[in-house]
Length: 64
Image 1 (tube, rainbow, N blue to C red):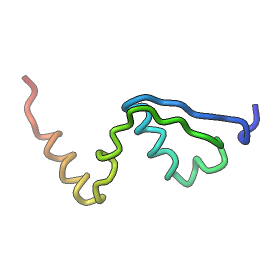
Image 2: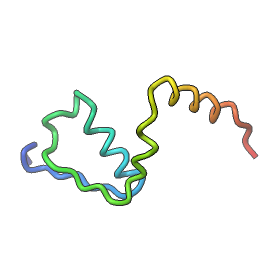
Image 3: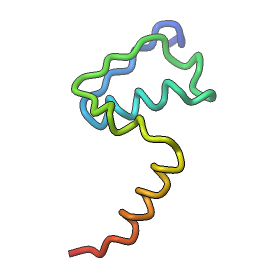
Image 4: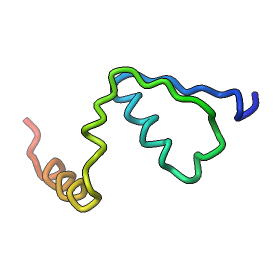
């Protein structure tokens, strides 16, 4: 298999994961195409500081 012939496909959270992978410098050149289905792209548009703060909120939330 060659990188210029690899297509990633994901739905929902999988699509979001692929979208985020497209921005990772270490992943450049590993795949050529991506198919995103029903990706919740609004989740990935938070600034780093806001995402970090939200992560702390989720981490502090008690389990039921």
